[in-house]
Length: 160
Image 1 (cartoon, rainbow, N blue to C red):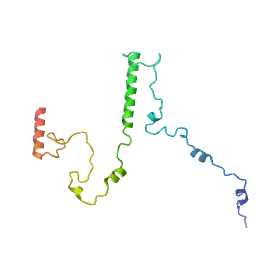
Image 2: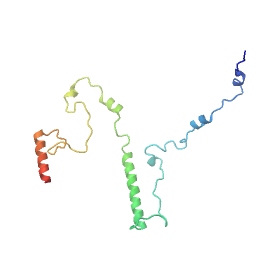
Image 3: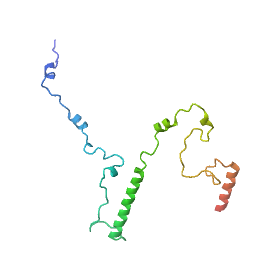
């Protein structure tokens, strides 16, 4: 009969033995953003006062043909100002939209069926960029079919 190998339990349960942490566990537990936790949050350009600026032109810098160095610096500063204004425009809208939970909670529970008789029939409509009503109704939803045909014929006649 052959003897089977059985590891000794004495070595594993020794009181003085330290639990070793693996290299991968040390790497996965690293917090690379601990010095500045908010650096990737939206709005960090403003709140953390990050120093984003357009570099200055030296004597060896590229200047497009047809512009002087001063003109090119003015164009670059206008571009960076436009970029900053665009960022601030979107940053100012943060938190202004209504999430589903807030909408649902604010709506409340309607025990009557009165919402069905309202113009919107219980729907909340988004604003559109264009006014889709009137004489030049592009969607055609409020215009009778005969009127749509007349309008199309007029437009075709005007193109000739």
